[in-house]
Amino acid sequence: MKADTRFFTCLRHARVYAPEDLGVVDLLLAGEKIACIGENLETPVGLDCEEIDLQGALVMPGMIDGHVHITGGGGEGGYHTRTPELMLSQITMAGVTTVCGLLGTDGTTRSVINLLAKARALETEGITSYIYTGAYELPTPTLTGSVRRDIVVIDKVIGAGEIAMSDHRSGQPSYEEYRKLAAEARVGGMISGKAGVINMHLGDGKRGIQYLFDIAAEGEIPRSQFLPTHANRNRPLFEQCIKWGKDGGFLDITSGINPNDPGSEICVKPAEAVREALAAGVPLKNITMSSDGGGSMPVFDEEGNPVGVGVGDEKTMLTELRDMIVEENIPREKAIAIVTLNVANALKLHDRKGRLAVGMDADLLVLHDDYTLCDVWARGRQMVQEGRPVVKGTFES
Ligand code: ZN
Image (cartoon, rainbow, N blue to C red):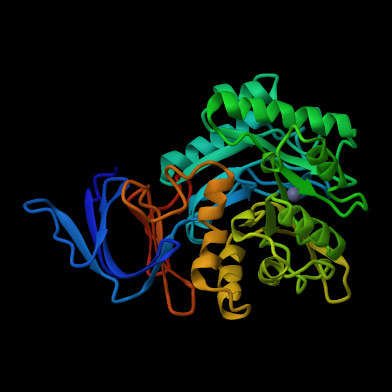
């Protein structure tokens, strides 16, 4: 903890979704943890405790973004299109307190070692970070020479990703290669007590996730070993992912792809995709959302000509959370679970993350009535106050 941070903070009159509805309660934060939740809490006698009256404002767990290019991504339009590293406040100002970093298309000029170093930097700066080992291609780059060994010996590695499937930018691996990777990650996860999950980038290729159905049909590797992402990137793929979800698999919807963005017209709007998946009978716990933040997003002019490259923004998570609740009429506790609890469960981070409960990490958001961001606490420290970052990354001015 920094010297400017009190050990105890009491948040009074919080309208808490944990994500379950706890009503209006007080929360006592002690160091990095939630120490107590209840009505009219007594603050520790004789100790320096900051008291903040939230006056009934909505409080939820800090979001867990399971798919972020923290070291930047892209590079598909030449070297100058490699997107830059994310700074701390770009993450906290999006309401995200836990990130899972990964590499994408470019596992050549970018490395897993660099990714690990960046993840450690973000942890030092105040949020929580994990990484996936690997990149789009198979065999995939690792730290120690094997996916299994990376998961077992590197604390921050929770699985492999993002591994490309049905995409022209993949290494065009065979069915056998995906199957072997899944086995590697699974055993690595078992030995280390981690998820050992494969964050599977889905492209627009016609085969979609057929290989995943085939692997699951063999009956040895469970569906939970895979977290297929960008499920909403086109309609046929989304229909496949709904079937996958109904059969017990996870499906991850990308908040950063939106049919209103030029070039992305064929995708399903993220909040709508959640509503549709629930209506189709996908269990709530199988649906997660991530941003693809830090990845490259092409920018087009009014005639549709490419004029540059933008960067995926984690703030789309909060926008889609709002839209889930306001536009799609998904109950608050369900919508919030999709960006908190469900991600924690899918990635086996649930002993520390994803819920507001005694003993859990003190990661929480205070939202305005219109679901815009007011305050953020990460591991007990206030990072954002009244919509402004009060803690900045090392190189942020
Ligand atoms: Zn991707």
